[in-house]
Image (cartoon, rainbow, N blue to C red; front, side, top):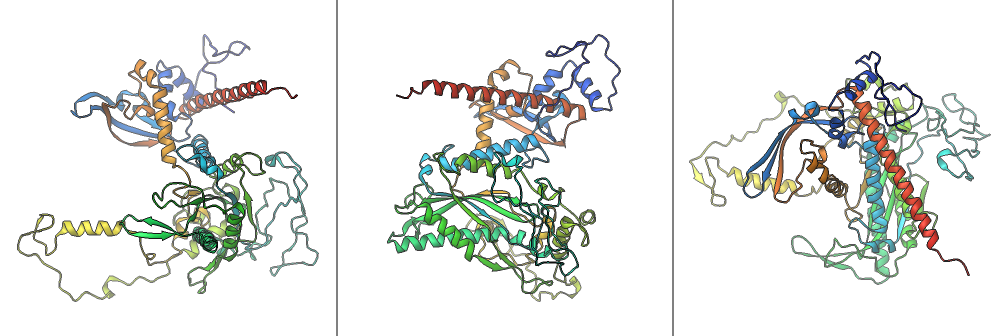
Length: 598
């Protein structure tokens, strides 16, 4: 709910738009209420609110300082000039855009709504995606990590609750086994408790010493490669199925002009990674089946006739069962660790007409919710760890999370011994010197080097732009230290195929254009007011050129944060109430238009 802070103390019990007092009590500016009172009593308070409107709900907005020039296109004539020194707080506020709800709830809510629109557009169309995708076979798949040791869990075989968020169903005993006594370390290997949803022990091992923390963090770091191989295996299964059914391959013209034959069917997935309470990653994915157009490979078309939802389910189940590989060798484990999926793999067909148990809106909302989460389920939240801060989180004899972080730091240590410069072999060849001045026949550059530096740089840039044929040599476990604060998982929490749906950038650009159009008349009325939403060009004949630099992060005072967040929360409540009233009005109108039954 929105926080409420009186601009001045109330003199009556009746609530109104604002209360007034003839003699305000003394205010101390070192408190949030005091600094908020000082800001709210200034003459430019409402101008400041309008100035920070674009980032009002952000927890830690970014402040920019500099100059903005309005330039006429074509002539380059400067039509106007504005500097942030003449604006409130001498800065422009812009939202941080963080996706994590624990860092910035307001920006995470925007990210979650964009993720919902992006994922749902890939199932029913819209936002530039053809509506014909609603007829494509689509599956909601869940791939889980294998077991690295018994953990406390809450298992409900049959839910009778209406809301899973407030589930009060009777759970099964955690680990009820009569034939198991003590583990090798003398701890009980059973648990007869029926855990509640918020129990702190959920996800924690029954025995910390028996649990394979090393294997789990290695599995997390290689889980992205496992998903990539699973997608490839499913596509190979579908390609073999098309060949057995006599469906020919499709000829596609590549960028170099060559003709390449590809299978007539392909997968277009979108997935979200979720960190479980035990710290292992599992993936929720939407897998859509598409066809291939040889004339325009980027076009989204239905798969060939005969391919059904059962074929897609069989392909994914086969891939999840068959794909497994061994990680590279490590000094602690020369044979590496086994990387494979767990036994629990759920595959549910998605109904885009709203009739099935798993609908497009349900799946998109479920995945968008996890896109804003990180390691909160494990009870650990921190920024990137370094050698100075690792001691506060890693402990080989600590709790479950501390041992996972310690495993990341220990396995990700440098494994090679660097050779000193004095002991490295020297190149016996003489260093190239200068030659007489000459002109390159290709680019015309005058140089005294034996080879033209301009042409060499161009060729090197072309080589750097090409995809690497093999991974770069080095320690494949070095990334574990970089992602120790994520318990080893270094991938993005929401990824999709290029043809599955639109991009986040397109959604953001559309929202910015809509806000500019919505507030265009306000900008004409208040020419002295500049918001972050108005920084770009609004006219085809003019262009806004800015030289803005980073000035800081966060609000100036806690009172500014309180006022800005309160105003933003009240605006969100008004919008939510308006949407609810509009939905109620539309539902009432639709119910009145339905003819009575005969």
